Image 1 (cartoon, rainbow, N blue to C red):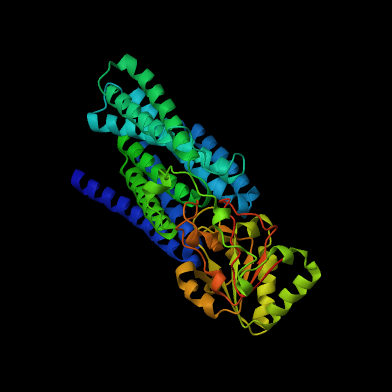
Image 2 (cartoon, one colour):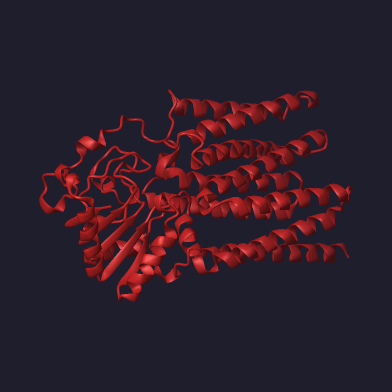
Length: 459
């Protein structure tokens, strides 16, 4: 009878895990992402109900109250957060997952200090450590994405040695916690939490600019790992499986983002320390290259109305049009205006597409979701690798609030924060119209050489 019950338990668990995987599988394309999110949420709800059913509820009032508080808070946050704030909220949610994992691990380690076997105790310490650093690292990421702290990378003297030293001390304390008397363990656990939180801060502040999506994906993976170790210490196979699934998907996304940025994960987290070159000095002279160079110094004096009229004429004559949306469009909340313009151009018989760079927003898929919310047909969204060969035959590229993702300095200028990063090849188009707030450098701080087509107009 016991074997039969175990078989049924495993069947139910694997069914719930399969539903979760099906939900994640639907994230591959924008069309299925919304239903995939609901499918994954349903799997998590089933897992939650199963855990309560199998372990029993000692204080139902506390459980119900916690569910009500969490649900109301989640609903309020979801209703108030705009699309621009989504990346910061996602980073905050990763941190919430981390703090939940390290709190559960701490409670289990303290409660079962005499009864835990070696595997469970090691899992608890790892859950404690990874959960703490995920929490602090995610708070740094959320603060940067919400503009609550400086968004550029912040490098301390001997930064790499500080990180490695912190990691070494964490390993030493973690090993010591396995062998010291029970009464001394709590002090080592507290030290482990503090040093892990410090590690997350020091690790994350060095990452910024276009590498932020990689950090978010990585923290997604560490949150899953922390949850999985938490599941091991409480011996819950559903939590182990769910955490491992999240860790795997986050790791795959991290790899994809690194590949899209043409960076190794090591170089994202441990960037080269050589002095950056002065990108402006390396740029081609914007006024000495003939028609290929736009916005020469004297062109800044051209009447604004004349430039707008000329740009409008180019838009009217263009047959092949590519829209390049950037984070500036999101900040200006201009997506609806852009969609309205595109609808008019399509009605005029123009072939219009949106070129989506992997880091056009502040997290993977941010721009896709923003445009989908504005009512853009999914078929009009084209990823960078697919759209780049089309720029040479494009009559007009309309850049809306994008800088780094179209900056040829990534190709031409070594030693900058975006050097080697694949970009949208807008400078190969016949005409480029830039609709930006100003002509200052983008998020990375690297100036654009402005060699962006035969006739370029800024507005």
